[in-house]
Amino acid sequence: MKLLQVLLLLGLEMMLVCVHAEGKTNLIGKNFNPEKIDGEWYTIGLASDKREKIEEHGSMRVFVEYIHFLKNSSLAFKFHTIVNGECTQLYLVCDKTEEDGVYVVNYDGYNIFTILDVDYDRYIILQLRNVKTGETFQLMELYGRTPELSSNIKENFGDISKMYGIPEENIFDLTKSAPGFSWGNKLDLVPECVLVPTLQIAVSMPEAEGRPEHPGG
Image (cartoon, rainbow, N blue to C red; front, side, top):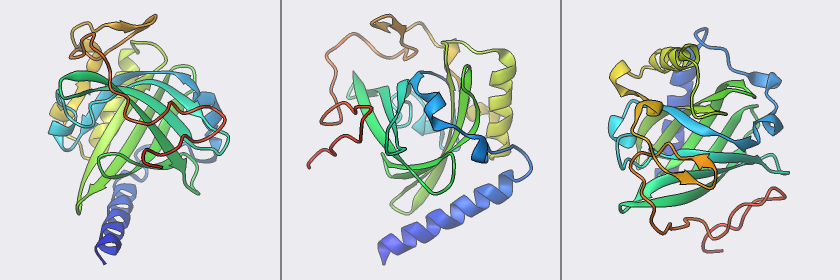
């Protein structure tokens, strides 16, 4: 019964989001080609109606390194975040739904995320709804192919976030943070990270051929 209540709440929240955003921003729909987002990305902007989730050490303050398109149409993400003061690698596999550009994943609750806008060579804008213990919050993310994006793209991300009800003070431009460090030749935009041994969340790194085994079997 409790699971049913959570699912009903999630469905209601998603319906309200769709009604709120209808006519304000175009979803990519059937034009979306998930294979084209494969490769390296940088987290440029974050926004949330629950600010503490994206502040320093917040569970959703995660920084993307790459996205892999899997043969089963899922998307595998590699992120960097802070866990117990250490820079941590986080691997997540997001399962495709019947709707183009919409995926689900379990992380800090149950999440449905939608790719709202994409320029395969420049940026991605995602909108995520999280449900955990009967409570919900919303997250917006801006990824770039390079560590910096034009002011027009950033302003567009801010405008879309506001359309989804997120106040301006909860929209973060992470490129204005202090310099971070590098893994390999890739600049890390995580200002809080330090060079310490990392903890790998998943059992193994996802391969492009299929989905990795879930921790615990």
